[in-house]
Length: 73
Image (tube, rainbow, N blue to C red; front, side, top):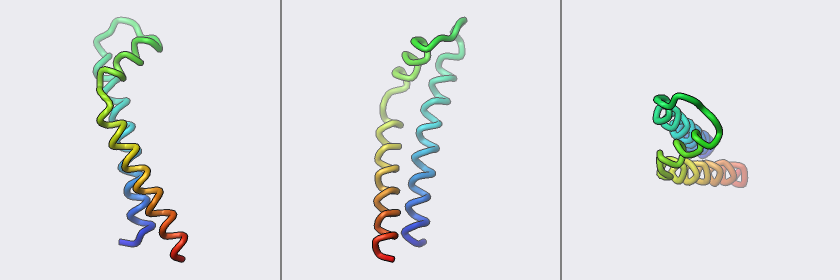
């Protein structure tokens, strides 16, 4: 796999992780009778920060791979 392919894979993993965080928050808050911004934010905080941290790390690694591929070319 080339550096570009690895970089795009890491960025795709980051997008998957961040979307998983929001889906989990929506599932977590699905039994609420009404929805508003504050309730969704509390449901998002209830999911924790592990997925957010992993997605940021994955995005940074992917960006480094892409920049490295462009510099070497």
